[in-house]
Image 1 (cartoon, each protein chain N blue to C red):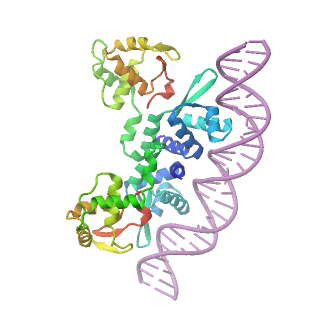
Image 2: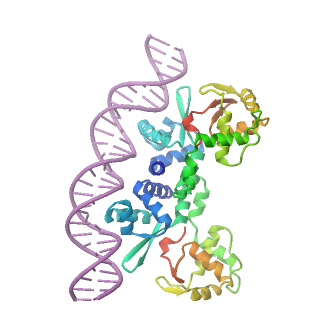
Image 3: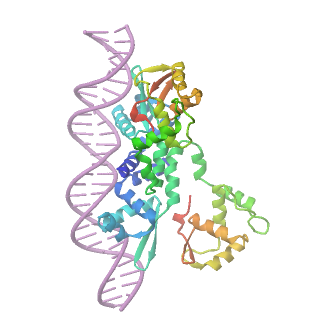
Length: 190
Length: 190
DNA sequence: TATCTAATTAGATTATAATCTAATTAGCTT
DNA sequence: AAGCTAATTAGATTATAATCTAATTAGATA
């Protein structure tokens, strides 16, 4: 139920320690012990709070060797924070169940006979549908060089730079040092 | 402390019953028993939740005979909901402590030698300072006819309609059936 | 494989808070 | 003033959750 999502978001945010964590991660990613140190709390406590923040999807993690870095998902935070102001507006319902039929229709409208993208729609929901469509063929867990991503995108559109940037901004994929990787599905935008 | 305000806001919002109340009041004001009935809870429970919602200032009340009607302060709700996204931005600090010196400066800039308002600033903070300034002379607890309010405003500016509307929109005053009244100070915008 | 580091889980303790019934208060209305 | 209605307060019960220590797991490196 939609209501519970909103309740849960605010219940999670409504804790001083967790807001302090959000505040820290806003500056950039940190690993667990660093957070514990800065807040003067023990690692298990931080683990506990990070679990909750991950559950509502405003924090995600990346492992580097033995250390796990935690990142703030600013977009998601912003979108969730605004939902309370739209509660009851029936826009809300439309927004959360996109059927496969609707997806197919949007794809039909924006992909031409040769499988090329005609244009990237401005409307957020439609744009996401097409971005997701263009991910097909990329594998989870595999890393790609920027050149490989560019080539992949070019089967749909010549402007690979724009679309590559959209992939990253929408959290479909992650980039570090010119290496790209698909984000886990749970991290994708709604 | 600023942080506590934000924590408290979300802690308050993060409750199913309270979100349901917000959702109801979004449609329009209701009295306590009506809310209790619609939610299937007892009046003391509703009282308890309304107290919390009033504490964070997103609900206010008006008495009509024996019945108290509760209203949602949508503006405040929206502003508070957004604060979490701005946490850490130092804009935040500037925003919450307006000194008397700053106020005086803004008033000096926008009120001419004859005590007339030159123009209503577009910047929210400055606008609020001037609106508050123009309330001077009106009494709390007293009711005013629209004509009286118009006359009061005209000592500052000829366009009383715009300014009167701003007073109401900013929650400095309240109108019902053409009768105006100052809102309590706690209800004023930040 | 053994060892090191960082993170998580288990389990206990303590604090917070949602809801109810019963009693009380505030403000009409007659 | 007496009685009525709606709201609040007091106090008890029950559920939820923040934090800690101790034990465990996951992954990297030597």
